[in-house]
Length: 94
Image 1 (tube, one colour):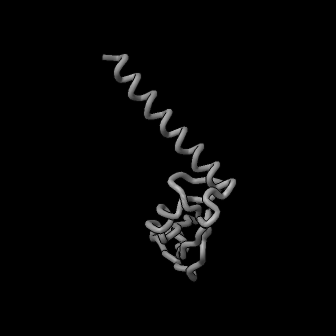
Image 2 (cartoon, one colour):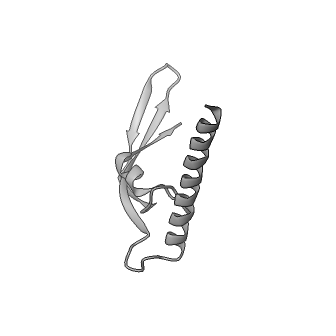
Image 3 (tube, one colour):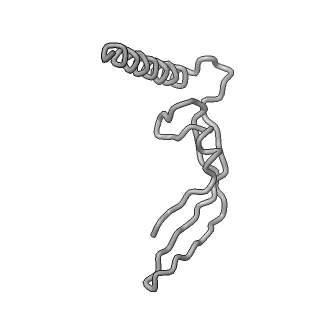
């Protein structure tokens, strides 16, 4: 039983590593050439300010465009576009 579980875990990790490597090479060398590797998503920054009296103040700033990568995993320091499109508010605690 332990061998089966270990085998399944090993296969899943190997598939994840192959997928990540394939995406990286596809983005790095722009394969296919017609695909845009990067995109932009409009994100609204929200400053969360904790005051001394125990209250919390929310300060909404102007929306800004964030760069994202069109892939399943994050690459080159950018989050994936599918993730950023679902999280359009960036919360910054002060």
